[in-house]
Length: 165
Image (cartoon, rainbow, N blue to C red):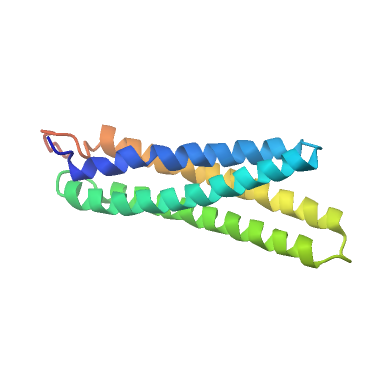
């Protein structure tokens, strides 16, 4: 039996969620590490997890578009699909901003030798923490609206009767 195409999206969403949680945990852990070698290893895995989560979020968004095309005629409120997609696009945007902040501060740290590095580090941590909160918020909203599509609208449920109010 071949898997239904609309099921690739719900299968794919767990991977970006795992990598998002992983990069947040790694980054917070490296803030408390003193050993420079461990800090460099942690930063490498943080950056790799961030990039991986960004790629996987984009792939999941793409698979969500194809799933939406299949289930859109079977659910009562199309606006719920749009809301779910909007939150996932905002999540992707926050991940892109987070990567841009990391690239910018890596560049600043390497090229601003005369600047106050402590101020740059504090600003960096502050921006990253704000973006972590935004990531968590949009991840939760995306997951919640996706769950509502399945449990309230019957998206991708076989033989679901379309009982619209």
